[in-house]
Amino acid sequence: MICLESIHKSFGNNAVLQGINVTVEAGNSLVIIGGSGTGKSVMLKCILGLIPPDQGRILVDGQDAEHAERDAFLARFGMLFQGGALFDSLPVWQNVAFRLLRGALKRSPAEAREIAVEKLRRVGLSADVANKFPGELSGGMQKRVGLARAIAAEPEIIFFDEPTTGLDPIMAGVINDLIREIVVEMGATAMTITHDMSSVRAIADKVAMLHNGVIQWSGPISDIDQSGDPYLDQFIHGRAEGPIEAIR
Image (tube, rainbow, N blue to C red; front, side, top):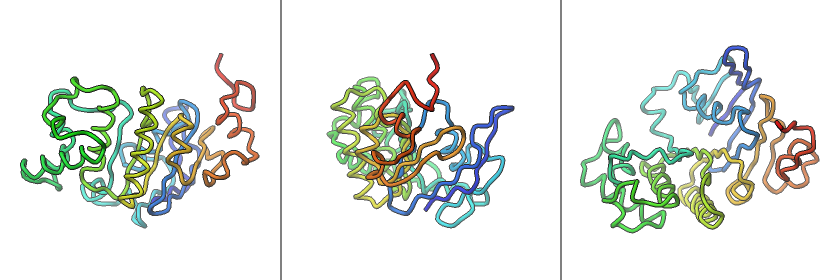
């Protein structure tokens, strides 16, 4: 479903991506791990066309992303943002139905609200939450609203950017379980960025580690503990000592 071929991206003298090669099969869940500032978010932005790569090619379902018709291309994606990115001035149902109230996917307000309430129920929130504002919700509830918005338009591909950041371990587990259930239920292709190894183990079919601008290691989640790669081993166990230099 997604194929990155030798993707390079620099910002001035800072070479962030230095030949990324990644393939995500349709219906699979790939989790990208790596230290802060290694280019994980830049990679997602390149796929979405928010940042043009300097070199290389990105294919989505066999189509060159650079030459795709923009609205139709983006309609295939859903995204759960790291900070929730909810609109404080809009009630919850309008946040969930944001894409359904405008553009190519536009529905009537009544239909959009009905879909929003259905998606809220899917993530474990009752219908009365629909008329509340984001500021009235806990962090965990806001994350669920963001997840409901990500799936509202039934996307084929869903990106999750640090889905459990700021959540306590129990709520993080709930969100991980929801993500896994929804991805399997929808048959969606998923890409996730996270530092949370519990998330990695809960939602990944395949893992790829980004380090020094390249994919240091990739493989099925079942191989992660016996990879034999010192960089991956240091990262997943959180060791200060190893080939990855910690900034002190």
